[in-house]
Length: 419
Image (cartoon, rainbow, N blue to C red):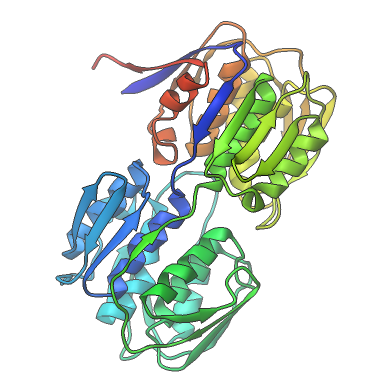
């Protein structure tokens, strides 16, 4: 097991480069199944979830090679349509393969997916959409089996703008006969990136980034090379890190449009934020002031930035309120922040944060991916030493984050624990 050790109190200074987006890379990896041949995904991050998705594709018969920052995926020899249960339980993104395998093989069998334990994330919207496209689905003993004698276009209205369901339906619909319309679709930048990838393969999709996506089915798709968008949550994390440590960071490769909700709240809290051709520059200007936040689907404030923002607000002047509207169980980091001296009360989906003058280093544990990075941020401003266990969660979404922080001046180390 590994852990992070942090000595806080250093304002972060310098330039950091953001990697390709995890939440764009994973569905695009799944989408390579739709074209028999070799695709190249450029700027694919070195992450635990990417490794798990690689193993899943290999279990299906694909050949996957890592070539520097790129992934070369040859799906020409895919001969399996069942995803091993142990791999399904390691990453929720494995569910994306349902739509792709239905379109490619006409059937698929999966276990219910795993991932971070941040509350119920049912796959009913995925199944509803696939059923509308003429898939017959059976759920039994913890497994989902789907088959089709031919996917057909349909109108699908999502009860909630689910990112995963939107992407799964898109992947199935590109090979369906006729036209599919997804209403109340998710609008996230990763949806647009998947559309761009699929269209480059030969799909006919329009409307991604709006609440209505139209897909005209095609007979076949071809392999391509494609560069994924930069990770907006990694970008936002470094923006918050600059503001709360009172430092100044230039974030290269970030797309300002994707993080405008975060920029708006940082400015409201008192930080300086500029987006330009060279990147996104964030400067802390002293002690921040409290702000209120409600997490919402894009373009609202992202739920994946809620824990990091809570860490920042725990040392901001005054009282802040966070309403978590996306996941019911995403306050697990609160108890760990309390260990460090934060004053936070939760009730249902609401958290009330009374900012304190400073946090104190402590031994804490990461309960999930974003909670883990929130504790890193708290450790960067805490007095004394902070140790964070269960950091494999952080490795699911941040590539060598300690090395990036070290280049910005942070005193953080990855330690090997004795067996």
